[in-house]
Length: 381
Image 1: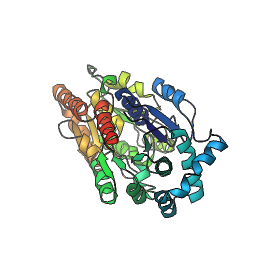
Image 2 (image 1 turned 180 degrees about the horizontal axis):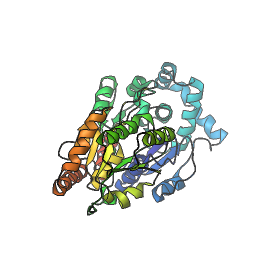
Image 3 (image 1 turned 90 degrees about the horizontal axis):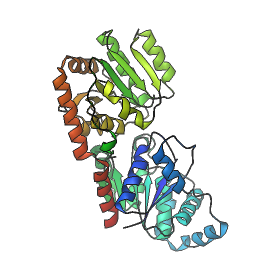
Image 4 (image 1 turned 180 degrees about the vertical axis):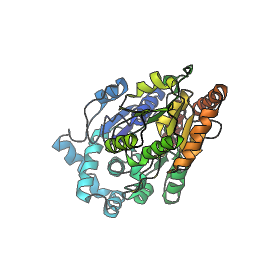
């Protein structure tokens, strides 16, 4: 099977478990994986991340002789020069040199695969053209909708572009010279086994970075509208709006709201059974940023938790009336009605929602299934 160099903007990043999940699953299928990180970060307390950190290389630790030899390939590659001349996101010289460095590290690989459609994708295209091998990239969220640097150009110069939800694939398709495919980010459902629900708990769960697109303020307003003193909400995550949203919760008199801070992926697997449902009130931020198919909702459903989610991007494909509730973004009244309907359900009905959600995730979002799809696409190039 093809050996694949993964070009990753920054590694390790705790919130980007989809990258390590995918690399691990592709390696288990038989691909040799070489992670190339453009920026390194302090290690996170996660064994899977630590495993890949041990195999990771960077573009910066290469010899001048190797750089010179690789650079000698550039003058004879008209497609490379067309890409460099047409793009505007980076200086042509800087992008060429970064691509050369990646090509030196990726020499011997059969394919280059980048996560995120920004500088990682641009540099991967340059490196692949220098090496004469195929290249692909995955679009996620902000890289496609908030800061889409030369996106159409990258789509035309890639052999394969991966969209993580249907709306993104529809956006990609008209511009692709190569193949565009839908491969949602998958999860290992075995890590999120269903547990028996706890009796008497009347708690909701929100998990996410505390930024505008997560819409936590909409959820806080819905909680205030409900006016149920017994209903509690635990908020897992950190971010720049934490203080603002803590102040909002206090001003609304929401004494049942707790800000728990960031937690590792394993936290949900051990604590998720204590909640009635996961609430994902996500929105499109003013700068265009949005969630396209958040793993946390798939993980919650794999545990048998119903999900109340905004009808937005990949969430529309994931959540249905059989697995939870879909609500309009930025609509506290709609969210209030969904929470009230959930609370009014008999326990058996809530469990049925959870079981259907788990079945849906196992059928459509299992990590091994998505890895097989990606592997087949890469092998066919």
